[in-house]
Image 1 (cartoon, each protein chain N blue to C red):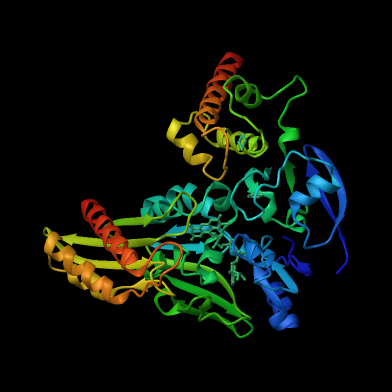
Image 2 (cartoon, rainbow over the protein chains, first blue to last red):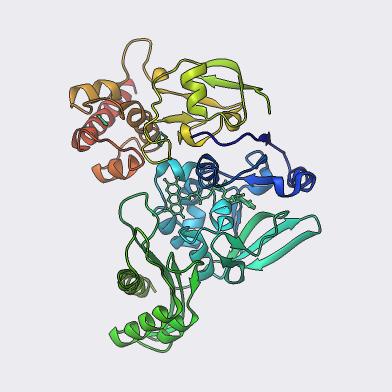
Length: 284
Length: 163
Ligand SMILES: Cc1cc2nc3c(=O)[nH]c(=O)nc-3n(C[C@H](O)[C@H](O)[C@H](O)COP(=O)(O)OP(=O)(O)OC[C@H]3O[C@@H](n4cnc5c(N)ncnc54)[C@H](O)[C@@H]3O)c2cc1C
Ligand code: FES
Ligand code: FES
């Protein structure tokens, strides 16, 4: 399986990468870890006459946790997310989720930027970013703009990012409260049959706020505001949990594929969400 | 789009090779440098038979272009053995029957090598999780896990003795 021919570029700065994008327009595409893009190129489902490898752009790397704000460069690998202790202290859900992505080899190469920019509904980071209410920074020919993760995803492989923009970093406020990422997959290394990201804040024994997002249950990640609201004010008991699950089921739209029929996916989504809520609550 | 010259340091030796940008690293290693240790099992990034060590990371060399590795330091199974003989991991795979057909073995050992660099004292669960990107169709994994744990113990004992 050999991709069709392309020219390889390895710019050393964001400006230089943007210049190549501008010069070649639709014929150019950036590559981060390549672990979604290269398989697509091998299958000839992606044709990239000009491949721009971002690996040498230091501006796109690094994790910082400062004053309750977490900023992660797009080229940070999933392995780096897992091994960064400051990040694990500020947002333990990041490590928990990253450990459930793919396998060790893929995590050494796959980046958070590639994972969120890809637009594959199976990717785990987009739903998590919606749960965290993260902001994506995009650099294009006209400068920088910021987009909320909750507004970024339009359809499978379609995002708000323009073709001539590079995702540079992701930022979010370090979450307060209990957090949990739960994922059901057929085997290790598989994409989710269903996954749930949950953050719950507790005050005087009740749910003060709840944020819930689901993965691989629609053609985009699903931030279910209704599911979160169903928990607020409750003691997170079984009634509240059932209400949250019903609300979530109203927001997802799974399709039948090799991971199972629609009814099964809805069932799994409910089980996974319950588990995630229970665990987040126990940590709140 | 013609070939370009890239520099790879493989098993300590520097090579300048000509490769088309679309050439996958595993093919450069196997066909240009004649290192047949990295195997092509699936070509779809799933099996790990093609695993090599690149700048301290375990990488599936079927999912990287040779051009991406330009300037990198690479270790393949051929570079794991020492001048004095087999690496402890290789010894332990032999001793504990960690292989049958041997197809997955170069990838398994190269991956286990990095795993033990990062975590010299893994639990059985950590070994299983750490080699989750390597498939074996023969052994059922039990003996692979045993071999890696035995190698860890041996390497730790050797380190202690040296201190
Ligand atoms: C065997 C296997 C199992 C996997 N399992 C999972 C899983 O369980 N969960 C999961 O979430 N993922 C999984 N993945 C995907 C993996 O996490 C990818 O690495 C990730 O989706 C993409 O990251 P990347 O850095 O490799 O991006 P690339 O493949 O390099 O890029 C992906 C896309 O994003 C674009 N892009 C990348 N970076 C930028 C940027 N900075 N700005 C703009 N556009 C950009 C590229 O142009 C491309 O279209 C798996 C992959 C494999 C091979
Ligand atoms: S051949 Fe590379 S992962 Fe199977
Ligand atoms: S020994 Fe045959 S595939 Fe592992």
